[in-house]
Image (cartoon, rainbow, N blue to C red; front, side, top):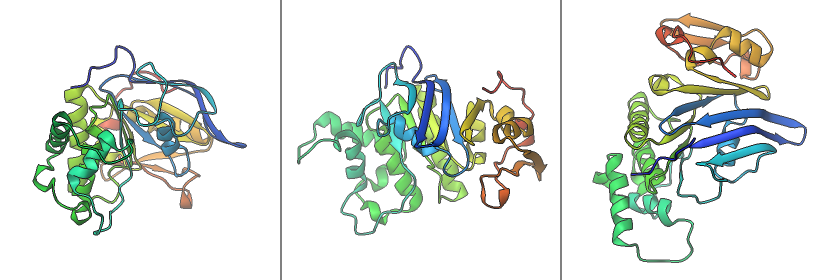
Length: 283
C-alpha cells in the first residue's frame, strides 16, 4: 500500500500551456489531495490530454510550476499510474495480459531480465485487484474491450502509485463495463488514498464519484463541485457567450458551447446533484 504524501498529491501554481499564439490554459492553480477524485472536462482540443502529458513529464509547462507529491514530474515515475485511451489491440499481439501489466513495472528498462518474486507477486496482485486473474495468461489481443481496459488499469496500478491519471478510460465501453471500470478506479482511491485525475467527455458514469470538476475551454478554466461548475452562469462566463444548462428527462444537458460541432455540447447530471450547494466558489 502506498504511503500517502503529507501534502497535495498534485500541485499546479500559475500553470500555463500554449503552442505559439494558441493558449490552451493559463493561470491554473490546483491542489489535488490524496484520495480526491477530479474529473477533467471540456471540448476537443481544449488541452485535457496535454495536462496529463505535463503531469507525466512528457510536455513542459509554458509557465508556472507543477509538482507531484512535492517533486518535479519525470518520465517513468512509479509515483504516477497512467490509464491511456481505450484502443483495441490486434489479435496477433504477442503479449499475455500479465506481460502487459509487467511493463508497468519494468517497461522503461532495456533488455530481457528475470523478474523477482516480489515483482511477480505485484503483477498478480494488480491483476487480482481488477478481477483479471482468470485471463492473466490469455493473449491481450483476444480479450474484449472491457477486459483489455481492466488489464490497462492493472498495469497502471502495478507500481502502487499515489496519483492515477485516466485519459478517457470509458471510451468505447458499454454501460456495464463503464460502471465496472469506474468502480474499480473509485475502490482504488478509497482503499489506497490514491488521487485520481479522470479526463472524460461523459461525466454521468462517474458523477457520484467525483469530488471536483476542472472544466477547460476557450483558453481558460473553472474548478469546483460538479453542480457548481456545470451551471449556466459558470459556463456562460467561461465561454464568454450564453450557454444554457437544461434538465431533460432527469438529466442536465449543457447546450450551446461554441467549440463543439453544431454549437452543442452536453454533460449528463442528475437534477439532485446539480442542485447541491457548492463547497466553495469555482475559480
